[in-house]
Amino acid sequence: MNLNQLTPEEQRVIIHKGTEYPFTGKYNDHKENGVYKCKQCDTPLFKSDSKFNSKSGWPSFDDALPNAVKEIPDIDGKRTEIVCSTCGAHLGHVFKGEGFTEKDTRHCVNSISLDFEPIKE
Image 1 (cartoon, rainbow, N blue to C red):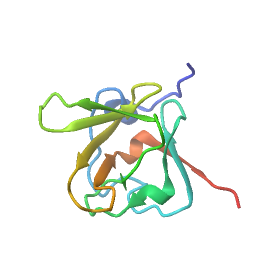
Image 2 (image 1 turned 30 degrees about the horizontal axis):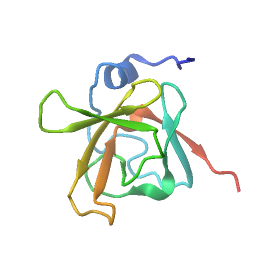
Image 3 (image 1 turned 120 degrees about the vertical axis):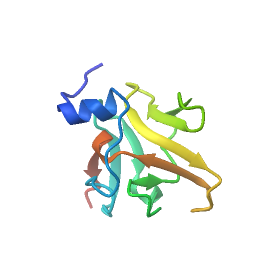
């Protein structure tokens, strides 16, 4: 598997399961049409039409692409971590039952864990 070179800050979040500060990520208010991909391995993870504003300070998606994201019980025992199914990169956490969308799911993702590929029209 080919992995992209990561900066020290990207490594802190993606490999060492850190978190970026809320409202600082470049994709929090991003509204372009396209696909959000894993920063480490370029696997497509989320389509832009599943993105919504949760006002949490991180990009939020109510659905992931099929088999792209794996859910793992977090070590704190309270949350569920989400990682890239291909390379295991830490993406963030998933929350269910909050009522933000009809799918009732919020994938709360660090912008630094993502790259974006616009859809060419």
